[in-house]
Image 1 (cartoon, rainbow, N blue to C red):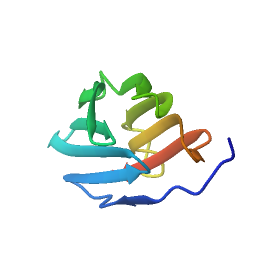
Image 2: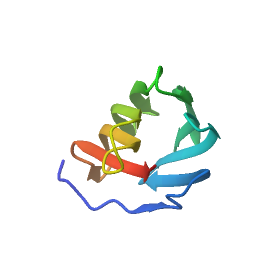
Image 3: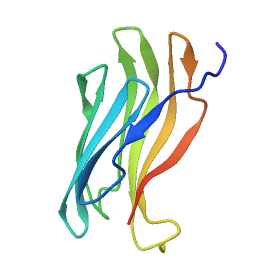
Length: 113
């Protein structure tokens, strides 16, 4: 499957916001200075394994996705703390494939903090 351009949209802001890559939507809200709530949907379907609170002691959630056999891949959301302004933030890591698209290997800082 060839790699195709996938539209990215979002608010990319704090304390809360949304970010989308094709059918994948990431919603977040800051609970405290070091905690961020995450919820991910694909085609509007909640991915329970990619829902939770990230903090310095629980900095990554990951799931092998297979949504209705249409979107597959391995995706992680990672929070990076105390590494400096050029690195700290919320990241999307992994790869997604579906009809007409392949994201390739992702390592995107969605929100810096």
